[in-house]
Length: 169
Image 1 (tube, rainbow, N blue to C red):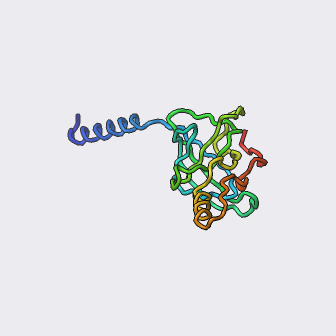
Image 2 (tube, helix red, strand yellow):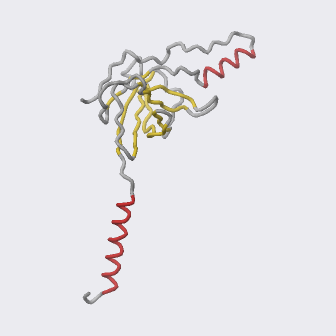
Image 3 (cartoon, rainbow, N blue to C red):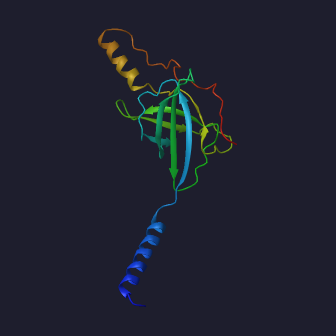
């Protein structure tokens, strides 16, 4: 063992611990996706991203891109799952609310999607949520108090259906 057996034991122990930690860490498959909205509806950093009701990632950036006049709210999401998640490039993102006063989160909808898998860094189309936003509900309640009509139909403010999918294929 040489002149310093305790040093050899420490080095072997540290190396063994490092290998054990590396093997214990779950393998993830990160994927970055961008999308653009007319209004981010109070979406915050670290909001959970859902696909089919399952949390698959987080929002890593919400910022204004003034050059995109019609849809200036850029949302960047990082999907991270222990399995390879193949999101079709024609999937659509909506902003949903968790309950009446809940947090806003992106929902990736793959129901009608049939396209090839989106590559990391790609862009998905967006469309308005079919559910009323928290802002719309509060305005409706305010109208009711003021004896005004309440209309919760979506006005299409957030439609981005004409935006082309620009993924790297």
